[in-house]
Length: 168
Image (tube, rainbow, N blue to C red; front, top):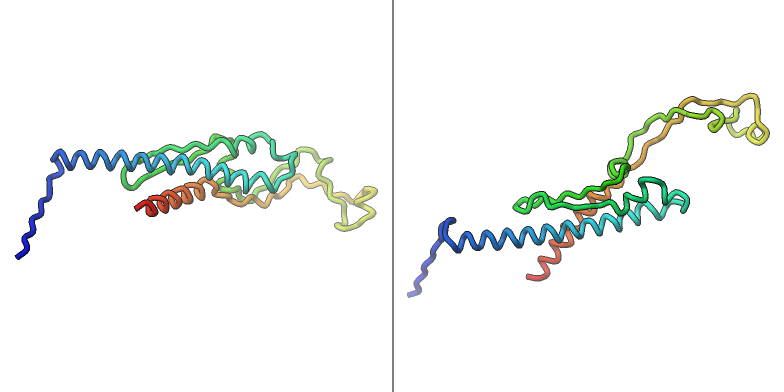
């Protein structure tokens, strides 16, 4: 007849404490790898999503240039649930990440924004006309959110999880 013996060590035993420490070190190491990967992925996404669709003259505008290289990550919680925070030091990071709502922009120079009337009149557009509308406000339709940091974190967690599953 077969015999079976099982033992559950208490949480205060040396083996339990040692295993908890080893697990905490492993979790912290994996979270740090996710953080490093998230920064790299965010830089790649920013390069792909933001800089390739602009003319060269607009790629070096203040703020936009620093966004692509201003990412940093921090492991804010290395126990379950793991938390990694990705941030960007650029002044325009919030606008790129979250987008901007539709808004009105006051016109600073009335000579720069002149709309010939009636719309589509080639003569008025080419030679000027007394029937010119000079609005005091321009309506901006807003910008779409890129969610680069969120997508980078999700992809980094997904890739690291797949790598860990493949090793076992």
